[in-house]
Image 1 (cartoon, rainbow, N blue to C red):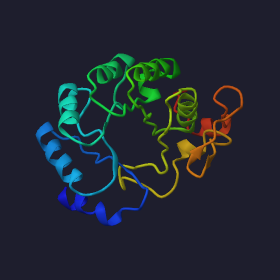
Image 2 (image 1 turned 45 degrees about the vertical axis):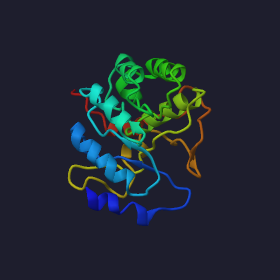
Image 3 (image 1 turned 180 degrees about the horizontal axis):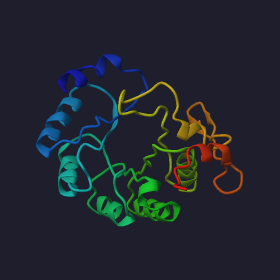
Length: 211
């Protein structure tokens, strides 16, 4: 872990802030030690994502946030608006990271965004799925006064290599034209519905319905 943290400073780019996801939820005591290493690295960290398992560790997540100078991001594993409310009420995160496909879609997503707004808590949605998921998330952020960032899955991960260098077909094949990204900014689709058109042939290729 120290080797990882010690590499942050030499790789700094002026004006760049790192969103850190170690992909390794840890116990509270170890997470505090890691936080100290990160804080001492000199890197400009925007947030540390999912340091603990937020669903089972709400109390400890709030304590980590209080005992660290780092912004703590979590919420992608929450499956209801009520679970997200718990994170908001305990001030356990900053920012909150709900995922539309887990919390129940746009209706629940709007409720979560409004709750975060009333609590003056920033939120940045988690999005690591299909082109439809991304299109819906872009609309969600655009329709929310406090929406300012949206995660975009550039490359997929596989069980064998953990990551690949080509976009996932779930991001490229399911719709005839994906949401445009220009200079790091998503262009909100203006067509009917989510603004993207399903590719019926692609859907047929990935259909797992038992006939």
